Amino acid sequence: MKNFASLIKTLDSTTKTNTKVAALAEYFAKASDTDKVWTIAILSHRRPPRPVNTTLLRQWASELSNIPLWLFEESYHIVGDLAETIALVIPSNPLQTDKSLTEFLEEMILLKKKSEEEKKEYLYNNWKALDYYERFVFTKLITGGFRIGVSQKLMTKALSKATEINEDILAYKLMGNWDPKTITFQELILEENENDYLSKPYPFYLAYAIENEVHDLGDVQEWSAEHKWDGIRSQTIFRNDELFVWSRGEELVTDKYPELEKLVGIIPNGTVIDAEILPYANNIIGTFNDLQTRIGRKTVSKALLKKTPVILKAYDILEWEGNDIRQLPFIERRELLEKLFQTIITIEGLPFQISETINCSTWEKVAKERERAREMHSEGLMLKRKDSPYLVGRKKGDWWKWKVDPLTIDAVLTYAMRGHGRRSNLFTDYTFALWNTNEEGEKELVTFAKAYSGLTDAEFRKVDAWIKKNTLERFGPVRSVTPHHVFEIAFEGIALSKRHKSGIATRFPRIIRWRHDKKIEDANTIEDLKSLIPSTSITTTE
Image 1 (cartoon, rainbow, N blue to C red):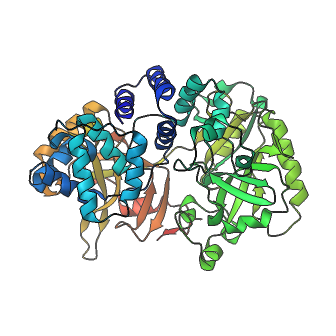
Image 2 (image 1 turned 45 degrees about the horizontal axis):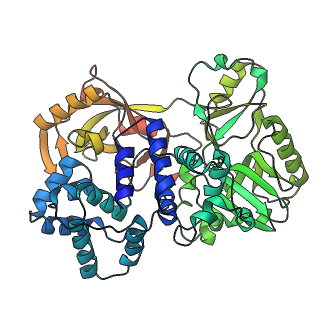
Image 3 (image 1 turned 30 degrees about the vertical axis):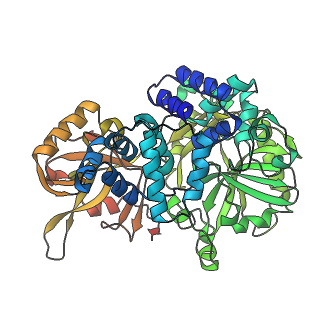
């Protein structure tokens, strides 16, 4: 555990990629094989289920530190991180433990089924036996909340340095549905296991947002353009008469989309399709909000299948006739995809379409098509160099996403909450409201969105100082403030919603700018917000 805690401390204290890679590589070279597997699992979001809820953690930490719960809660709001607060308030103890990371995690897995008293005793004993930073890391393992800026790409780079195995091979090995409780480091990293191949996806190739003018990409004839569909990025695998559907988050979601089983036996074995899962009710591509009714459901009812069926919108093919074809130029892979599509196009009722390419005779025509994105229920366009291979991870140069400009609205700041991490001492998490006319004909402010990004550090400090002087009421960590400041809020999508007080849900809201030039009377209304909902949208978020 000491070595793992030391690694986390190094990773958390630097933003330099080379320093992180060196620290990870050194750790992987020295750690036990079981600790290596668990470290890879933790850093790739394969953590064990949380064994103790945060309410009990706060209660027990306050008891052990002998401070009242209200004081612990106030400290938590100032510090901004529960594990760090616990590590700070519990007194150090001369007791020490030499347990490994693996031993701790195996105990935590068993802890989930223990009684509250047994859980409390376990936490007390370990909190007292660890120093400050080990206690912080231990509690993070309990809560499952590591955020230390280690991407999958960075981890595979470090593993490659430690094992001398090619990064792309390692990235492929780490994909799929492996379990750190049962797999060894030898099996996961060092061995070639043919059985794993059956269901394992390829690492996804990710695009960067376009940085300059689109004309700067050069000759338009060298590029292929298509809509950037707003669904769930997936890889659909057809091998050995079986279907495996993987999300970009490396979750096996085959059972969540049973209608895709129709493709088994139609699309040949040895085929892997890169595609978007899209809602397709009444033979019309829906919005992401439509798809949300399918996301997160453990079971998919017949009624839901009928209400929100899905299709695959295919845009690339990564494996053909059992061969990995990612190194072929995009244009050749595209030809194979179109060839496949032509063989099945006449079969009715298949949940499969091909993402149409756009005639790229001029950049102006491409830009014109981008303007149709919302009408098409897409996020914008994807631009792919015709001779590009299918790479691993996020790479610059060959694939670009050219998203449509966000929707914007001017709103009034009404509530504030302290931020987290380095902003834990500032009020940086804001709630915004718009004007609405109530049943009595009076104008009132109605909450519609929360946002916590978009301002500079200097602006956050100014808003924070103002909030502290203009608080109306306190509700735990939340403060209501005098309506005074107007901010321009941007968001990617919008839909009607029964869950929101305003009746509207916005997607990815964030602050664009502080409107010093506007009074609160100049802020937009709920009706203004509703007018931004596409006329073709009938979405209602339950």
